[in-house]
Image 1 (tube, one colour):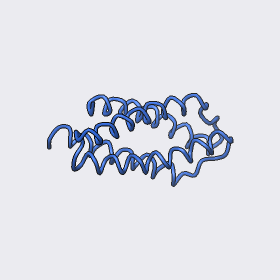
Image 2 (tube, helix red, strand yellow):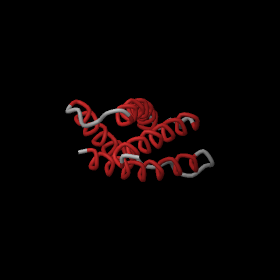
Image 3 (cartoon, helix red, strand yellow):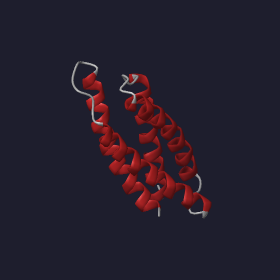
Image 4 (cartoon, helix red, strand yellow):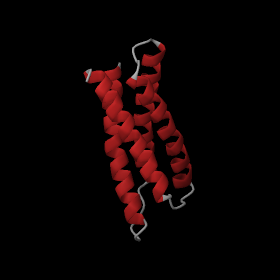
Length: 118
């Protein structure tokens, strides 16, 4: 279950990177990304988060995996806010984009370290 969560988070990260680059370019006058890309990113991330929660409830996620879960929840809350701003066609705050992405990367690395037993 944790392996599938990791794969889902990795795919979400790829979509998230595309979203972030497009949003940062939109600050310079380019078109912001479409809402569909944000939905796909959120769907993969939310699916990974659900699997991680289920793994935690089943006792499969311990230690670093639980820390990862907590950080992913923080990243998800930031993601919900960013999505709401995006849906209203508002400019997204760069600091929140960076915190959201940074938190997700840290959480992913912690989960990967846990899964690999490092």
